[in-house]
Image 1 (cartoon, rainbow, N blue to C red):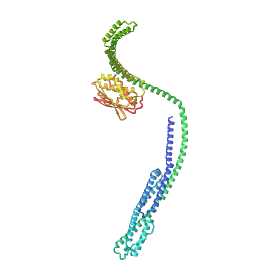
Image 2 (image 1 turned 45 degrees about the vertical axis):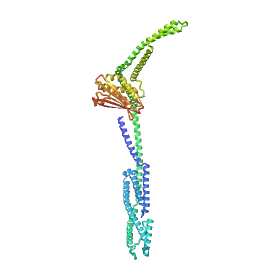
Image 3 (image 1 turned 180 degrees about the horizontal axis):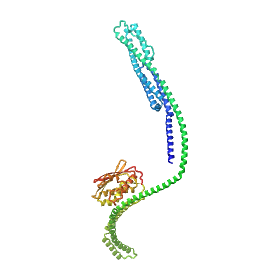
Image 4 (image 1 turned 135 degrees about the vertical axis):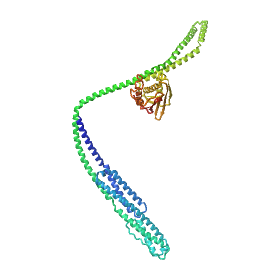
Length: 575
């Protein structure tokens, strides 16, 4: 079986590897990726055409053409980055020809970008020179002295038409025919303006020539052919990948058939041993189930044993608590018996008087004697005071019986195993109940209990479990103060979404090792015979069952604080 399993695992591993490789190829051949790539190339071609169109309109244009050209060029750069790093990243790594085509486009785009920046600067300079020259020409045309010379007027008018045509038509190849004015006929005062005008004509002609040279170079840098080359290389790569994927898919199908035959063979082999193995598993399952049930029963017995052991220690204290009210109940009953004897004597004379009165033939003398006797007995026993005292004794007796009933109820709730259902209870009431049960160790070890109970919301829990939890902690705290007594402070508070119950004693405290092991089953720091080692272990399980948490802070000879945090949203508790 082991040999067959190894062979099967090897075959499956090979199949998984081939499948993953095919899946990787199929992912690369995703139609979405193909459409994304071709769409990105089309976008680049469209943006490049728009740039070319806008470029032809940019000559000597000082408006927003430059900004639009820069924005279009930036969009081409962004789209190319998307194509290179998103759509074609894996393909570029896999195909050298495609990688070369991408690099060629990038290099040409960088050169064109530099040329475009140079052209925009030169074109801006030429445009500004054109604007300045037009302004000078207009100023000179307004000079009547100059315009009185026919030759100068004709030159200025001719140049103005040339400049206007250049400004309106934006024709990069339009001929430049600006005529300088070199002779001034009697216009000495305008000579400086005419010289500046002639210099500006020469400067504009130089800037225009540089701008047109940059424009011619820029127009000649066509990247559309490189984009077409990238598209051709990607389509070729995609077709080759499809062919390779189809071949590998066919091979994987054949391998799957071989693997299926192997699986059928192994299944036949396994089936031969299945019957005996199934019976062994069933037998083992029954053994484990029986062992689990036995272990669970033993655990319940240990928990109940610990609970009964704690209960046994509490009986003496509870008996004392019961004897106190029981004593004065008995005393009140004895006094009530004496009071009833006196009242019985009064009732006897009163009955005799009523009998004499109800006779048909009344003896008035006899009735008077019995009336006097009844009044004498009534006065002798002081009947009103006697009734008032009897009522007081009866009320005290009822109060004592109520205290005894509460003690017995607390004891019964603590001992019952069948009370495991979840109830909505007040934790302060559970603490009071536990303190009642723990009255014997509290009194025996001279412990003073300080209750600092805050108003708390009720939570859903198992009251008998919490009684056992609190009783274990209170008992341990009292035993820690057995030598010299002390104060056990119990605080309850609402902290955020948690209810905190803190038990702080003034006992001997614990070292670090004891703190680490105090919740371990059967661990105890008490003398042999004084503890089972299950108390705090059971307490910890009860805390966990209620989705709560417990913390311990202790220093030797300084005391211990055990804090339990219950979530206020506690809606379910388990045993």
